[in-house]
Length: 127
Image (tube, rainbow, N blue to C red; front, side):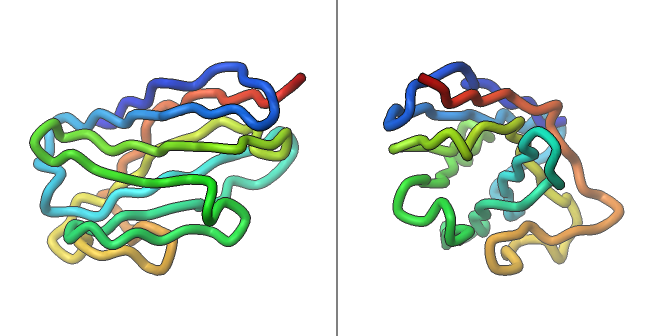
């Protein structure tokens, strides 16, 4: 299972740090990533970190968001700075727990039958 936390309401220019706690799997064998879904829009991948720590980002968040992982805590994070109203969305962490899923596919996680999603955490950026 994956469980996100850390969402909330923040003013433009503000910051939030999301957490994704993984249970039932040992995170250090796998890539893990973040998706978001804004109101009325399709879900989109925004960042991924491979099991060796390489980070990848969608262009729209590059330089503002930082993905990280603490394998000892079986937890991934997404630090979001300089938030904009267009960052308002439900944010999900995602991982595909199969032997071939150690590395990201650009800023997306490998997709497959063993993918797991968290329930999501809402981020609202508004003045």
